[in-house]
Length: 112
Image 1 (tube, rainbow, N blue to C red):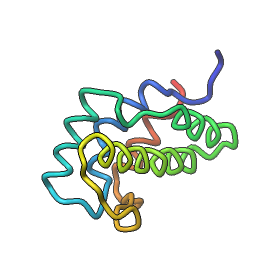
Image 2: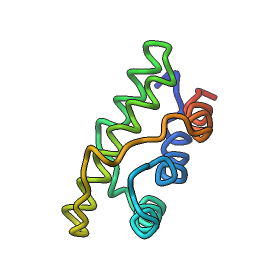
Image 3: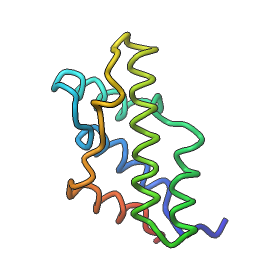
Image 4: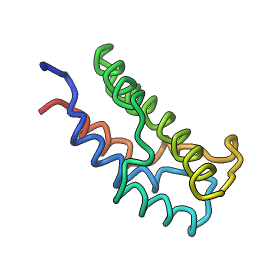
């Protein structure tokens, strides 16, 4: 498949950096998210790759990354609630779109 993005590299970077991009959570919850993201695919869903692919198809890698991050945030919140009984305010938890880690994710998503 001739793709204009690198899903594998991006997903690995997402699992590594995603927890640090979440705002509105405490340190203990961040550690749970970090552990789960680094050892499982609990926060994965079919739509993640679709979001990244959509941005790449429109030549908007940043937009695709931000869209993917938003869906990943929703996946995290849903999994925390259903699997750990940690219910967080969906409106209070957001992605830090000003973080320099966003540029790292865009770079990881770039086709090699």
